[in-house]
Length: 376
Picture 1 (cartoon, helix red, strand yellow):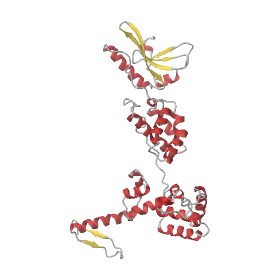
Picture 2: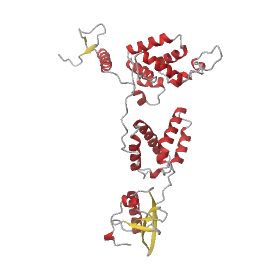
Picture 3: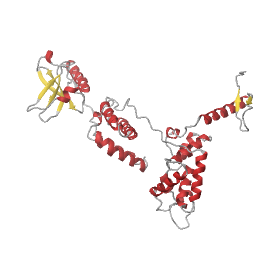
Picture 4: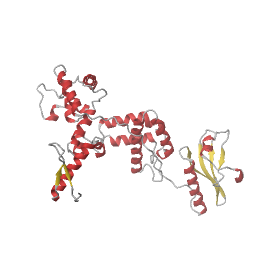
C-alpha cells in the first residue's frame, strides 16, 4: 500500500471516476485505515476492509458500488474494524438481502389486486411502466437512496410535474410497504423523506346558479335530437357520479327491470368519446369554454358542502375512501363561511340563553349577530 500521508480521503467522485485496468487494483482511503475500493478488470467495484487478523492478512468485502454508497461503506468498514479490535467475529453483520425493485413491484401489485379497483390497477401499471421501472427496475430496494430518488424526481418534474407527483406517491407507498413486510431493513434510511412534491395546479371548476341555468337551457334545447346524450349529462349533474359509472349503469343497480331486457341503462354505442364530442358542442353553446365533464362532480360535491351536508357524508356518496380526498371539494367562498359561522353561533347563543340582535339593514334573509360577552 502507498504511504497513508500521500493518500487522499476516498470520495464519491473518486469512486465513480475509477476506471478498470488490465489487473485488479485498490484505491485506499487516506482517513480510515484498511478501508478501500477494489476495482476489477471487468469494471466491477466493491468496497473492502483489508487488515491483519491474528497475524494473518484478511480481506472482507463490504458491498458493491453503486448498490452501496461511499458513506454507507465507510460506516460498515468502521464497524468491521471495531469488531476486529474487540476480538469478535470480523465478518460484516449479515443482513437480509433486499429484493430487486421490479420483482417486489410484481408482488406488491399481486397483493393489491384484490383490494384496488380496476382503474387503480391500470393507473399503477401506467406509472410503473412509464416512470418507475425505467428508473429503479434493476436496483435492489436498499440501493434506492435519497440521492437517487431526488435526482429522478427533479428530472421527472420538468415536463409533467403532476405525473411526477403521482409516480412519487406510488414509490413512497411501495417502499413503506417493503419495510413493513421486512423486505427493507430498518437500517436503510427513508429514500423519500423530505422530498417536496410539486405544487398542485388548481383545475377544479364550480358552476354557479347562472352557469347551471345556461347549461340546463342548452340541454333542454337538444333533448329531442339527442335524448340519451342529454340524459347522461343530466344524470352526471344530479348525482356527482363518475362518467364511467353513468355510462356503465345497469338497470338492476337502480331496482328497475328493462322492458327490452337490456342490462345497461344507456345504449352500448354511447361511448365516452361520443359523449365528449357532444359535450364540447354543449359547453360552447352555453358559454362555458374549457369546462370539463368531471367539473359536474366538483359542482355537485361543493353544493352539498355549501348546503350543510357534512364532508363524511359527501365522501361516502362520492365513493371516497379518505376524507382528505373529499376536502378538496370544500372550497367555500367567504360569504358561505361567514353564513355558516353566524348560523352556528346563533344556535349556540339560543341554546345558552343569550340575546341575539338582527341587523336592521339586512333583508328578509337577515342573519343573526350575537353578543354573548356583553360588548357595547
